[in-house]
Length: 68
Image 1 (cartoon, rainbow, N blue to C red):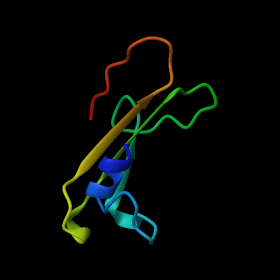
Image 2 (spheres, rainbow, N blue to C red):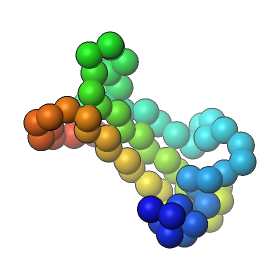
Image 3 (cartoon, rainbow, N blue to C red):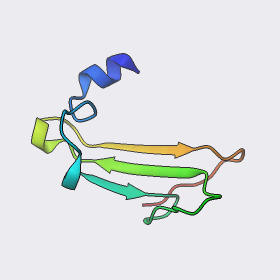
């Protein structure tokens, strides 16, 4: 993970991600309810000459399908 972070300046930027991030859940919209066990985000890397990154986090005990 440290090597991945160093290879992608978009992750460790010194300013807030602002308009370069879009939040998702298992569907296009994030589930911000208390029982939610998932979060996903798309981070655009263009501003820092990096690739785009999509991260999906599943803290649920079963497999889930993420759709965008």
